[in-house]
Image 1 (spheres, rainbow, N blue to C red):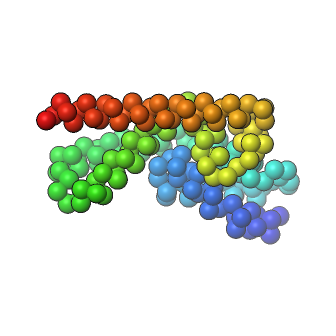
Image 2 (cartoon, helix red, strand yellow; image 1 turned 180 degrees about the vertical axis):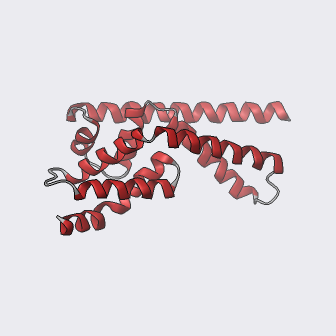
Length: 173
């Protein structure tokens, strides 16, 4: 089984870490969760659908570690507050704009219902509809509907944020 886990790691570590980084917003934490996922694979005698199993286990580990996520969010909020207090003088305008766009996109993704968010992130990582269905315990037929709803809602939320940002900019002028 060790050879199988090494093969699983070589094949799926990069997309799994990328998925988890998008899910968690923290690459170090994503790598920790991925490592734990592969450790759990070591304990399995047999895994039928490898990619779906790995993504499902990783997703469940993230759910199980919700307290860590809350702590991380508080820490990020403190850092953001400190940065606002110190001001953006050290950043170029273009990098600041990119950071603001990325933060807005992240907030839009976070605003989605959990199942929609996970399906969208898994699809972005190249999982098939069938693999997403297995990982999220959905019927394969409902994955397309879930993804369509998630994409539509993501655009709506993002556009709402852009409008709110534009109103805030005009109000400050």
